[in-house]
Length: 419
Image 1 (tube, rainbow, N blue to C red):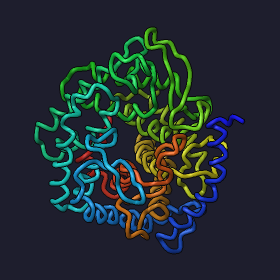
Image 2 (cartoon, rainbow, N blue to C red):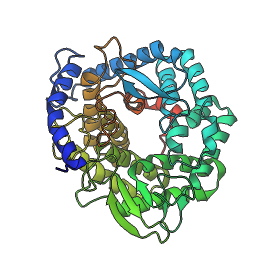
Image 3 (cartoon, rainbow, N blue to C red):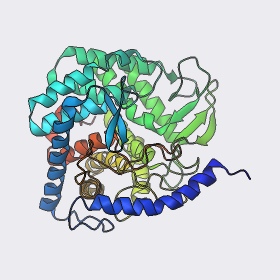
Image 4 (cartoon, rainbow, N blue to C red):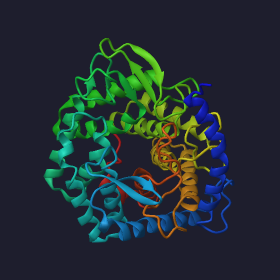
């Protein structure tokens, strides 16, 4: 009898509920007297601040212990230990990014030294035209290095990375192709939600060079995503395919999500944060409206524990494996949304997510763990990295906490300004 992979995944998801429950209990034990299925109370600002500061201190202490021995780029954990990529894969920018944020939070010079050394290893990637992930690679590493040190070499490298990224733009469809080498017909019309987070590198390039074309590409891509990805309820697919020659839309698809009609939670988070950021760079009100639609859907699907499941519309949702990285990414976008829309419920939601992750998803009870945040899921359909630690979760936890504790300090590293 033939059984489809989707059927197997659905069955496995059901079995994973029990595993998730036991993992949840173990994670919540990291902090005593916490009930993970109760919505975090954010009315007590002193308690929230204390929780977030303790989480940031824990993350910095973990980096203090682990970072001196790291010579490559963490990509995820196996048995609680980092596994590595030598060239950074798509996540290489988050390790020096974490170190920069640790330096800002602690003032310890060793983090600055380590951040510079780690960022330097990404230098060959500035000429990489085979990936859309150059924003992930160079914004938290080289752009931040330039903002914090003033050394022009970091800006020059980031601008070269933006130039490489711009070569992936397809003017027929108004999009940046996600995957595949230039000239490779495979995946030539494939667009993914993640790319929304790479657009700010192009905005940076326009601001620094006064060349409007970079921002024009970013805006065109965002408008294409805005026109095709969001459904009526504000949910989104991971992928949308286009004819690479004519630019005509073909339809939704997925790689990371459960199906073309589901809603992968980390992709939704990239959308919330990405559309909010492109609004900040352009002032385009429609981008802010789209960010709100995506945020409102995701918030409507959060369980009381405020840690997202890996896909909001998978068959076992909401009783499925978790992805804390989706939560902390979205929290950063929600803090922006609150400021831009003057709607405090977005800030309250961000605080609940950050507080929940800080109380129930840290690795504080493990002597082995090399990362700070547990309960992240890299790729559920590929059965790759189910409720592990991921470098972007550690990075965005620190970014979100610093947004709350000291926004002006974070603005030194990340441009939080609006047009």
